[in-house]
Amino acid sequence: MKRKTLEIAKDVLIAVLICSLVLLVRQLLPGASAEPRDAQPIQTEAEVAIASKPIVISLRGEIGRASIAGDETALEMAWEQWGSLLGQAMETAQTPQEQPEEAFLQALEAPSVLFSFAGRIPSQAIGAWLGAPAAALDGAWQDYLLSVRDGSVYLWAYGEPCQSCKTQLPAQTLEGLLSDLTPDGSAFYFERTDDRAAHPLTLWSDGAVSVPSASWENPVTGAWATSLATTLSFNPYGSGTYTDPQGNTVFTESSRTLSVELSGKVLLQRTNEEGTLGTAGEQSASFVEAARAVAGAICADCGDAKLYLTDFSQDGDETVCRFQYVLGGIPFSPDAAVVTFSGSEIVSVEALARAIHPAAGAETLMPVHAAAAISPQGSRVSVCYALAQSGAVTAGWSHL
Image (cartoon, rainbow, N blue to C red; front, side, top):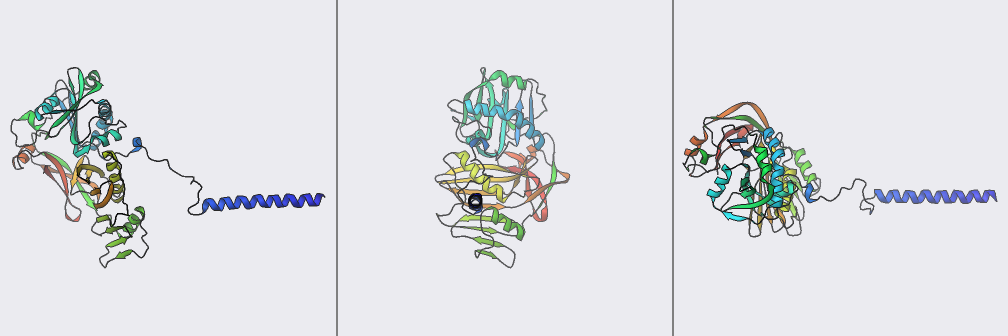
């Protein structure tokens, strides 16, 4: 009897072990229904990555102006301090009213904070980055202004026409923060001269401008191309991969292609409607995030530079997001990446892979008023870098 009981116990133990082994194998098999242990939560709006930051932040107090430009550390600190106020203003903004340019410039001379980006950035995207939905103000502008008027803080957007919204941000809050401001002598073009040779929001400089030197490297190799293909979920070892004698590689699937040239040029395309390179929702912030994700993957090896969204445009069914490399708060040309949507689907990504670094020395540029004199009438003149040949970088004035 004892022996029979012992045999039954052994059988039960074996059965338990077999069941445990089957469950373990099922978890390890591809396509298993068990949830991976490292499963990540779905990204929420508050977790959207910041795709751009201002390249100029200008503060106007009762006795003068102080402006920050061309200094990444100072810009980051100012954005941390003042960006939250922009978010509060966006979240509480009332219905926008159209205003002439002159009214915007008058608001800029009152106690105020100006946030200037490198190009048109959707207000919804900025609101998402700041965790403050921009419900009332809906559009894409380069310049956003907080200004005190009649005991209230107004949110402005510079364009044709300009927009202004009354907010619930207390005027005392903004005025209190600006009360200790020490002017640095900076000014905008319209504050120094009636000459309209340059755009009124061009930052004035009395003398020559010194710009830190920079250099670039091409990160693209055969191994880099294979790694990028894997990141973008291509099979780099399949029959659809072809490398020409010059070392340029094309990865082809049934609905999309990836072309990587050793020069650094990258082209990602959707070849039919069944494929997808990325999908956006209805809001402009969703388009920006989808574009940032794929552009950021391609331009990830950018050295000490950062990848900034520098323009957002929509024309009918087409949406285009442009990105540039930015070093020390100064953007580079040409574009680092151009992401094009048809409807809500990304249909192409053109990119230029570059690793950018600071270099010893500095370049001296002519004063801004001299640059304005040789630029098209009314141009917005600002410092920029240009990628030249063989790793060289030149600094100069852009006029947009």
